[in-house]
Image (cartoon, rainbow, N blue to C red; front, side, top):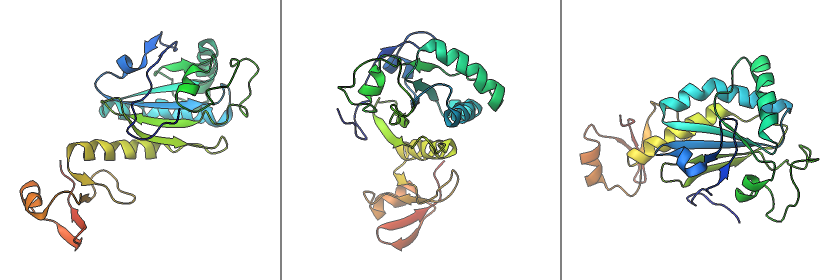
Length: 219
């Protein structure tokens, strides 16, 4: 099954380092980030999990929960978490899903549905496609999907930036321009007429082109 933005995020029940969860129930009424890893005790992923542990308070401020997934048993995750804290300086306090039967990886189209076997005997190379980030909204819809190669560490500051943009644009009829950061000017979406915009943005805006209207970020 292929997944697209605005599809409902597949629900599942799975063991984690914090007990068994039902994914949709675990998300609750907030946002969630699911980010996956091809194998425990891999170098690039060790740095990523540590950095996400550092950023977790920022995601909490935004009512967003984070959860990791690796195609390995929970017991391995618990041992790996000790290495992550030792080497990265931040304890992993968010749950890590154990996916030794490859169930979640297949649900999220990170491995072929016909893939057989378990995590036993698999290598990072055979799981190379299990290296994705999904942002999921309170409506349980997929808002973002990114997949990275194993050799490139993910930029989770960018994921935080995208979340800020999504939460802003979910509240207000604006879009964010290239390289936008929280607090910078935004764009009035084309669906808003000038008459509507006068009510929504009484302080005015700058018209670059009829379809490109720049306005201060709503608060």
